[in-house]
Length: 501
Ligand SMILES: C[S@@+](CC[C@H](N)C(=O)[O-])C[C@H]1O[C@@H](n2cnc3c(N)ncnc32)[C@H](O)[C@@H]1O
Image (cartoon, rainbow, N blue to C red; front, top):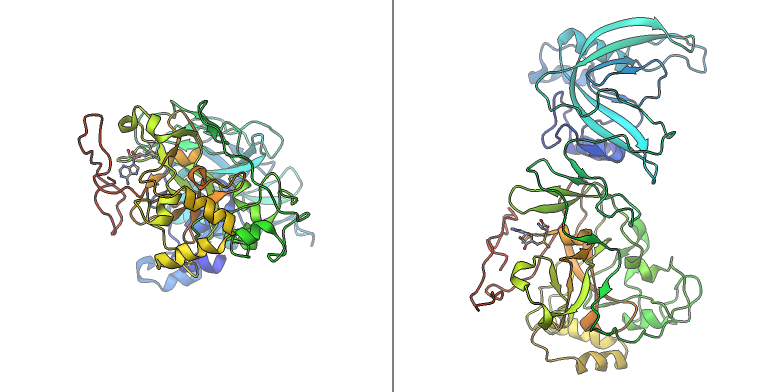
């Protein structure tokens, strides 16, 4: 990973990092390493070493030079009043009995930064919350104003550094920083940009914060739900029969659910479970199966695993980014809302959150969304006949059942996330997306009411916005008066078709 980081960010730099505003939050050191904000996994002082001396642009500088420090509150002697910090250097008090810190590496880098007046990025680490996660905030640029050796409380001589926050940066919202070190159960951070600590209100296994650096908008007007709700006038199809496997499904020859997928499992276990290739429909194990919740064939039922963040854009409202790396083929989230009949929607033109369940139309090539090609080694066969043949490979009864439902020009059912929904409702459209829509059947086998799951169609690096292709046909959206509605696309990719619909 370090090597990867060196490839992405061959040159460390002091100063702000493009795209990382003051107040930016990170959920792990790995994230900071990935974006190059702080490129040491263990050391709290990150610095540019002697190799930078040879570079023309750094001519005249004395190295090492500090670029970033993490204030984690681990040192009992540290003082932190937000704008003014006393920081203890690294090393000393080791098992060899060395009680004096050496003026080398990070310590020397801080001293050199003081002497050459180069800015140092300051990151604060905090722990807290009911998930007890560690959170890091980027708090801006500081200058090292003083350096002196001092006796520490633990009886060793340490180098001390005073850092003062540079003027002209966004204010920090706390004037006394309190580290929790795992002792506190509260989350100490309230950055002005954090408009909601968790849009999921604790329902998911991860927090999903919302950040707004654009305007005054907050997250309102919907209730978060992790599970689909069913409109009162809609009856769900009967629960499907299941396989008789025990524990985990392992044998595709004997597992009844694997048989529906063409005598194979659609997923591999690597990287926490990945879809091998997009399919017309994936048959997962369901409530009547003998296997347990950890079964390989239930990967999309295991909830959101990646750190996601809702953020405000200047031209597309809210959007979602991942703070984790997401491997190609991994399930990211299901599109959740209220299952409704499409012909009973009254305010379609005003509701931005309707997902038509058009799996059957897609499979039959009658106006559903285009199958998405996946990156790397994963691909959807281009051949429509091959797609349908693969569906024909599933058991005859299911195939017949699907054929009985054929001929529908439009999706009969939809997922309306206008009033109730999950984080998927905030994911925007892109003409060159990094997610794709996969229909999944688990509880029942009616493809018209299939679950809609968004999978990564490529390896997605941290901090990337998540998008999928909404798959509208141009001129297919009409308002109540029958006039065609058009919506310009702001996905900003080179593939942009200029209109969503
Ligand atoms: C399902 S919502 C996505 C979340 C939405 N941005 C929000 O603020 O809640 C779909 C709506 O987002 C906007 N949107 C999504 N992708 C867009 C794009 N590429 N260009 C312009 N607007 C987009 C459109 O208003 C669309 O009707």
